[in-house]
Structure formats: C-alpha cells, structure tokens
Image (tube, rainbow over all chains, first blue to last red):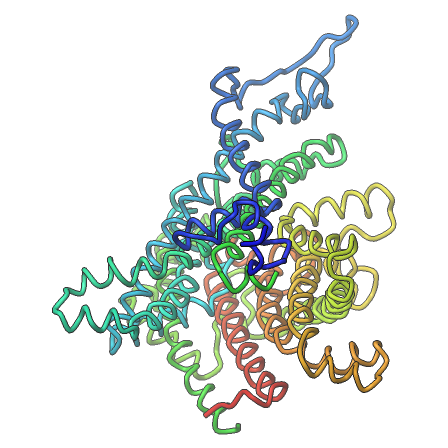
Length: 313
Length: 308
C-alpha cells in the first residue's frame, strides 16, 4: 500500500485504492466509474432499463391487449361484473370496463418513456442549436434569441402547453411539440452560458486564427465542451417532460383514450375512486417510480460529470 | 438601486409585447368560430355576421392585434364570451384567491423545508439526513393531480376529516388539502437546497471562528450559518413562487378553488379567448415581477451582489 500514500482517504475514492492506480483516462471514463459507485443512481438506471424492457417485451411475449374487456366473471355460479379487485390473474385488478390495469399500465409506461426521451431530446436539439448560435455569433442573433427566451420563460407553462395541444389537436406528436415549446428557453440559456465561456478559450481563438470554419469550431470544439452539460440537462429534463405529459393527458389535452397513458388512466379512474381505489393507485405509483428513477439518475450523472461536485460529496 | 428597478421595468415592455403577440396568434388559430360561439348554436347567419362585424372579427389579424393592444393600454382586457362581464373585473376577483393559496403554501414550505434541510445538514449522513434527501426527491416526483385525488380520497372521502373541495373565504380547513398538495414539492425542494447550502456554509472559516470563540452551537447554527445559507434559499423562493402562482391550475380544478388557474382552465375549455388572453398575460407579468423582486432582494441579502 506504500504507493497509495498520496491517494485520498475519502470513502468515495476508495475505488482508486482498490484499482491500485490514480484515475486515468478521460472525464467520461472517470464519470462512469463514479456513477457506477453511486448506488442510488445505479438503482435508477436499472429501474429505467427494466421498465423499458418489461413494457416492450411483456405485451409482446404474453400477447397482452390493453383494450381486451372481461365483461363478466362467473364465480361459484354467480355472475360478477367489473371492476374486479387485484388477484392472481389481474395483479393490479381491472377497471370499470373489465380491462386489465397491469396491461394498460405497461402501455402507459411506454408512452411515458417515449414522450420523456423524445420530447426532451427534441428540446435539447432546439436549445443546443439556438444557445450555441446565440453565444457563437453574438450581436443581433444573440439579442433576438435571448429576447425570445425572455418571452417564453414568462409564459405559464401548463397553460401554454394546453393551448398548443388544443390548437394542433391532442396527440403524441403535439404533446412532444408543446413540451419542446415550453422547454427550449432553459436549455438555450444554459448552453449559451457554457458556449460563451468556451468561445473565449485559447484553443478556440487559435483555431479561428488558423482559419477554421464556423461549422468546424462549433462541432469539434464548442459542442464537445458542452457535452457533460448536455447529458446532465437531458437527463434532468426527462422527469419534467414525463410529468407534463401525464398532466396534459389527465386534463384531456394529451394522449386520448382508448390509448392508455398513465395520465389519462388517472383521469378515468377519478370517477371510480371510491368503487375501485386500485385503479387510481397503480398508474400513479408507477408514474412516481419512473420519475424518481430518472431524478436520482439525473442527480448521479450531475455529480459524476461535475468534478467539483464529486469532491464536495 | 431605484435606477436598476426602473431599467428592469422598462425592459419588461418588449417582453410583454412579445407575449401578447404570441398569445394572440396562438389563441386566434384555436379552431372554432368565435362569432358563432357568442351568437349561440341556433342563431341565424345574419346575426353571426353582425357580431363578427361589430367585434371586428372580420378584420385582418394584425389589425385585430392592433385593436387589442390599444384596448390593453387603456386597461381594457375585453369582455368574457362566457359571462359577458369585463375580464379585468373577473381577474381581480380570482387572482387574489390564487395569491392567497400560493403565499400560504410558500410560507409553510419555507419554514418546514428550511427546518428539515437545516436539521439534515447538521446530522449529515444519519438516517434522518437520508430520509430528508429521499423526501426531497419524492416530493418532486409525485404527480400533483394524482396526489390531490389521493388526499381527497383518503382524508376527505374515507375518513371525512377535511372537506373534499370548495372555498369558503380563505384561511380555514378548505385551504389545507390544496396547500398540502402544492406544498409537498416546494418543501422538498426547499429542504434539498437548504441542506446543501448549510453543508456549503458549515465548513467555512467564520463558522469555525464562531465556534472557537465559545459560542453555543445553537447560536452558531441559527445566527451565523442560517444567515449565509439563506441566499440560495432566497433565489429558490423566487422560482418557486412563480411556479406556485402559475402552477395552481391542477390543484385549483381538483379542489374547486376559484382562483386564476381554474379561471384559465375554464377559459380554455369554453374557448373564452379574452379571458384566456388576460389570464396568460396577468400570470406572465406576475412571473416577471416576482423575478424582479427576487433580484432586488438578492442584492439586499448579499452585499457582494451589485447591480448597475
């Protein structure tokens, strides 16, 4: 252990001692190492991957149909009508029409994950393009983009998203679009700040002096420098997107029934709260699990990718 | 400082202009014939046409926008299509109820969140600390409409402890359920931020000095640490306050709280354009004003911050 004398005694850095060498390689390899040691973040990651796999594979393997209706059930010669309480056949019970809630929750998870990743991804693209453009070109481009972010940041988010889905007609696509419209200003500001700082670095100035094109500088020097920020902002924004989608669907401005989404299931269950409380319980719990998983993964990524945050812990 | 405030207020004007333009265009592409909506389903074509002309709905959209701005400058937000009353009057009755709910929630969240965050930071790494961290994450992750319904189901319907919904003038048992629903994420966030603010402050030299000169731990925490940890908390209060003012729509419609969120939702539902435009405008302006207030307070709390 003699050669490890100079290594930190901090618990968080125990892995350095174990590997017998100081951290080497890139920021991203270090970050991945740190993330792997972050138990909460890894649980989040595993939950997300597991939910994605389950929601895609289970309905395919078992041939589950979210709209299949069990209109009555005969028990001991008696006719029973839905909703049926949770049992072995329907582990989350059925709704008032006799549709299996577990199946519908699985389909709802698909929608949530899809909207979360796609809407946030599109938001990031718009935010990155505008933010980097504002920082790099400055002048009136910067002025116009920043005034636009001012305007959009002042909007009440939910109301704006509702108006947009109302105008375009509620669907998966318009929900994503609405989320991009309400989400881009934050990302733009974030990216602009980072890109402004990078733009003043010597190596960027050197490239410009050597005659590198705008496109080359932006794609080879500015964007890679912003990558940690992009990863963190992407992952931290997913839970918000999922929450807004479910909120919009709850109010009838998002995914429309009969397509199940966790939000519109809760809206449907609202009328039957006292008759079958399990109907409102499970979609909500699932929503919480998904959002918590993304939140703790986002926190973990934030800590792992920020060398200062890593030291502070 | 007064110059700074005036400059910020002036900078609001283009933002508000942009806002009105965006919301005007959006509202005008909402499908549905406004004149037909006002005239009613069974009105004949001539009546609808007449309404269209008197309201200027047959003019080009930019002219309509110009007229809207002219009215706006004179303090006229239009008349509601639904109730035929001036929108400004209606907003003035609903907005205070939202402010009442938001401020009540915010005050309780600050006290609870700050206290929890502080206690967690002092007992760093303990079970309590981990519980608070969990609470912070969970508070942010609970969908409000679901939580509102569950509270209603359990506390109002099942046990009958609290009224399920309604409004009876304000600070009574009717405010409890909406305030809890709105306050859980706020308190969670507050606990999180104040915990990390305290962790940042506690290892500082002036805290060590305070301890070294023999101060009691209580006064070290409550006097020296608290004051310095308040700065990040303050900026959170700003963002949280605008979230509360504009994010009450869900809670207000579940608990039938007659505030601006429910008003906006109803306006959207009935395609009541003047009411919708006014709601968005009023909320947006209040977001801007809250942000300004926070920046001003920031300078007051932290002498290192200077504005020019």
